[in-house]
Structures are given as C-alpha cells and as structure tokens.
Image (cartoon, rainbow, N blue to C red; front, top):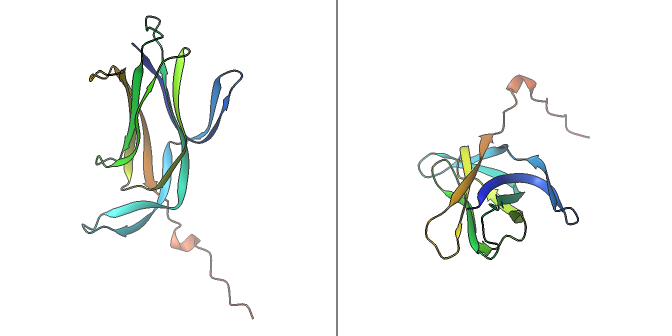
Length: 162
C-alpha cells in the first residue's frame, strides 16, 4: 500500500530531471492578506490585492509489495477553516514508475481567501476503480491579516510639490 511521503505548498521550486530531485523555495506557512469589505452577514472577507501563484506537490512512496502494474488514483483539495473549497486537484490516475510519485501543480493561482484562519490541503490515494481511500496526507497553512502600522509610526504626508 502506498504511503504519504510529503506535501508542499511553496512560492517557487525546481525539479532536476537528471537526478529526479525536487527543491522548494519559500515554503508557505502563513499568507498575509489585507481585508476587504464585509459580506452580507458582516463577516470580513480576506483577499489578496494581487493574485498569488503557488507551486503545489503531493508525493507518495511506493511500498515494496506494491505491484508496478497497479494503477492508483490521487486527489487533493484545499478547504478554508469553515469548509469552503479553495482549490481542488481532480482525481488523476497513475502507476509508480519509480519509488516515488509526485503530482505537481506549478501555476496554482488563487485570487483570494474566503476567511482568515487555518487552512488545510488534504490529499488521498486509492487503487484505481475502488471506493476506499488507502491513505491520506495533510498540509496546513494560516491565512492572517497583515499587521497594521500603528498611527504614531505612520509616515507624515509629503507637502504638495510646486
């Protein structure tokens, strides 16, 4: 049965095709956002002014008893603290061609986040055609409001030119 190896959300990374090594830079733990106006219920909505592009990977390790011809399916979803889906990587099929299988999403663009708090990406794996998931892994990250500059530290306005 395949096991979780790792899952990562980062701002950038690289994949060495010669050595099959993956590197990740600026791993996402906390995403700072500015709040936008409130929704109809008065709840603040977190939002990025500029869309943020992520690199996402979930990686599974092949068990020594797994048949190399066995087809598996992997699925990943990210949800907000209240369960709102932020993004989904649809179910995809694969066979292990080596010890590890990586599912990459290199241009995962998000326009914003529905709320502040602890988000979770959850990935699952199962044998193709079966209902039961064999294993899952998670990757948490926090969406937090930008710290505000106290009024006494705010820069004074510049006098008009002219």
